[in-house]
Amino acid sequence: MASGQDGAPPTQPKTKEQALEACSQQHLALVACFKTCSFGSAFTGCCSEEHKQFWDCYTRERGTNQTRLNSWLDNFFTSAVSSVKGGPPEQQQQQQQQQQQQKGKQ
Image (tube, helix red, strand yellow):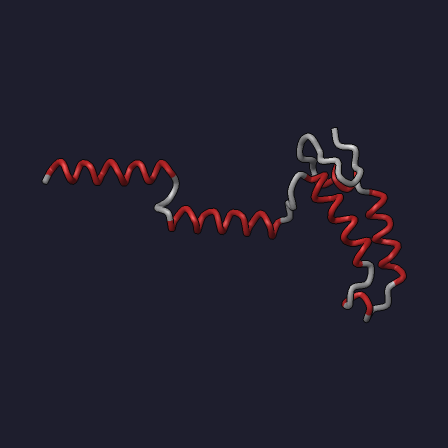
């Protein structure tokens, strides 16, 4: 099981809730820092070090950077690459078989 300390990768990915629990100290530090930021400084890098520490911990504990956006992007680009390469391996095999059958008929 992961220790939740920097540099210690988890043995298996965790749920969001487990990752947040493992990174609770970093999360509390980030929230406390955000409370000290002015509205304007929130857009110019307020709490950047705390933010980095929290996200480093969270992504390490979670196993990967599993956000909905990242999952969507992964699926989108995986699908796009598959379609460019001719589709999934099963589809490629079917295409090859069809081509061989057509060559046999000629």
